[in-house]
Length: 136
Image 1 (cartoon, rainbow, N blue to C red):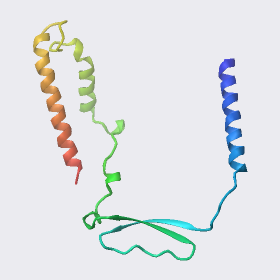
Image 2: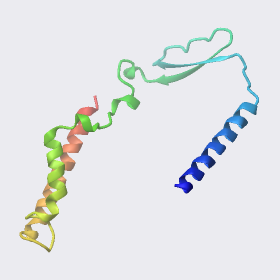
Image 3: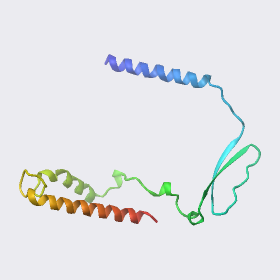
């Protein structure tokens, strides 16, 4: 218990030293405001008014009405996974002890390797199909 208290005290000391250093650092406020804009095709980059810096990113005209590539791919959330997919995962986790397991131990080990190869091929094909469907 004393070791964790000592570690916590060391972290607090380091954090307070870092904040003191940040407070002592000179602040350079130039009074200018930066604006980031994405323009498409041959559209002109807008001019900034006094005290503004405009940074333009240019994309092709055929991407004008599309969702940007950075936002297209969604991460998988466990709350959005179907029960069928969850059960498939549980079956795969316990497959090593079941018949057709592609191992030298247990029943049907000799046929399990071919079944495992077919399952991997099918999963790769489904993943490629899903990836192609997500790309508009």
